[in-house]
Length: 323
Image (cartoon, rainbow, N blue to C red; front, side, top):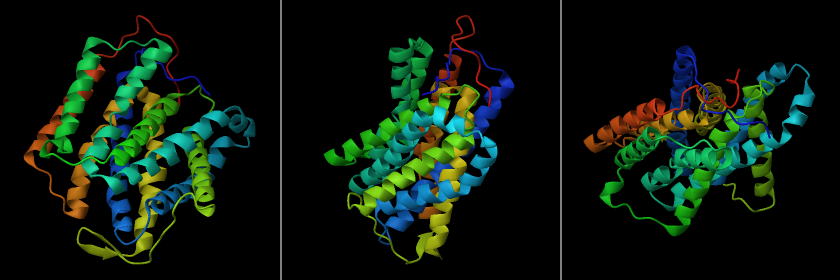
């Protein structure tokens, strides 16, 4: 597996700004997956089918750009085969399937909170595996961001929690943490679009095989979906789920992580929870309350504190990654 990006290296302001912008665009794209997937599931689609079409459509969209980026250098794919497989099996297929299964068994709020604990797992991994001990301000930022998430997804109302659902959500959290960590691995040799396309293809083939042998339910329906009180054909939701919420979001996300490092990028990615609430309001009529707006402000504050707590260049461990 390729070396992970070391967050201890100082980064130019322009690189940070572009990275944050890409991360926010990725968060918007990812945030749309909930409403589109829910609209399909409510018409009779299974969670497995929703994830499968999302992943396979995205893989198809990115296949040509990935081949162009490779320019016939198939040795790159062989050299980074473990990275691509880990990304596809855990960060793509495993994470999304676990999240959709969790939402099917428990309320969306608790499932989102557990999944978005992944930045804490990233910090723990970088500390335990690479000796990157988080500073006091980083820890404070993490706590503030997590407190904000509690408000954004409104857990204070006493949502019921299903044990099996919690286990699925923990699986989604693990997959999300692997996404941030593997995406940060960059020795300048593996193009981000190749990692995304390869991971999506591996994940899609694995899910399809699981469905064909009966391990994964693959139910589908041709009924119209309803978004923003508007009936839309099922293929529109499927297309948006694959192109916008997967192909586009994974490419943008990988590019962002390679600019920011896994720690900071994972915390900027927390904005997906806030954006998910807003998108659910616009598309599904789930209006956010004032407490959720306050939580969004805390999430942003936490991200700023994490950035301020990032170690400076006094102890660089590896060169700044180059896309």
